[in-house]
Image (cartoon, rainbow, N blue to C red; front, top):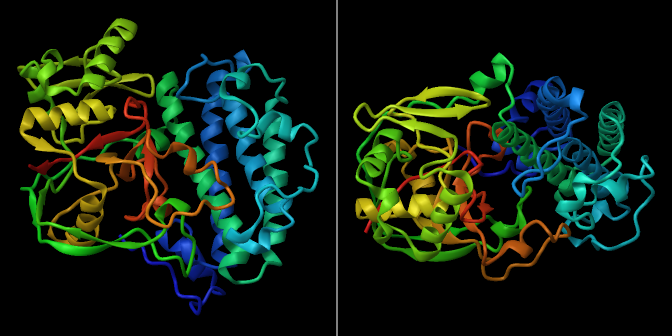
Length: 432
């Protein structure tokens, strides 16, 4: 997969050229025409996903359980529009890009209650279930109005990285929340239409032997320009990486079932102490000792029944094992006499070993690395994106079947708490 942004001199005027970029990682460096199409594409995808919620939940006014791993669907929908309006339409310093002062005074919203409802920095998670959110028709209208305003502003924007920064940020922010709507549907057991269910079906893997990656000095992270870069990808810096062996693909269900068959969930020696505590608490709270959503594992047959969007489905042995916490991934590696890859190893392999069979992008992949700032880190104006989570979260790399292709850069750093297993995550391993 290509990850380098387009150079500033690349043509942006051709409609065909722009259309080819809208769901490509090259959108990070694309100009107004492609970005405008991508923003419309993202909004259409958001509304299509939300349509699944309307069919299932509109009759009960979108009431869902209060869980730490999800947001109320109407709140999630409105927040997407609020974020875009906050950083583009209401942001009088949007042309300054990363030099924007995040706390400067904003213009008023087109929706008077927007900040009170959807400002994630000032509306605590637990309060989102008690808000007097507007009805769904008003929320959808807000998303259409904010997009129209954004596109009008974009049409008049200069073709440079500073001027386009917040439009690109809002695109990727919406893509992240669209994936959140996808895994929330999985958490709630919502059915999906045929097209989405097919798109969200894990692929089958061609199992290959592990790859030996030679020692190298690697430039970890992204260069500051040209194009868009997330703050946690900066600053790019050199890292000496010894030779390592890494799996060519994520661990499959067939491989994971062997761990279950060998009593991996009952042997504390394979688990870090915090992971073992998490496992016992999960068994007490949820009555399970195994991956989330798995209803049955046939040890003799290797068959795995996992509930996907409300329906129990048989998972194939050569599909990537999915919905494991970091603790489970780490325990499997200890049982197998292997380890999780460092994120720099994953990045090196994604860039240098693709032609030798290194496959990624099917499930998010836990790495052995704690999410930390790179040397010289400076938060971007949306300071809540990375900075609050350093030191507590683990890094995931790659992407899942629910991740838009334009998000799938081998430089992109995803991050979650180690106990999260509701996202579409798996893992691969390295030799010790």
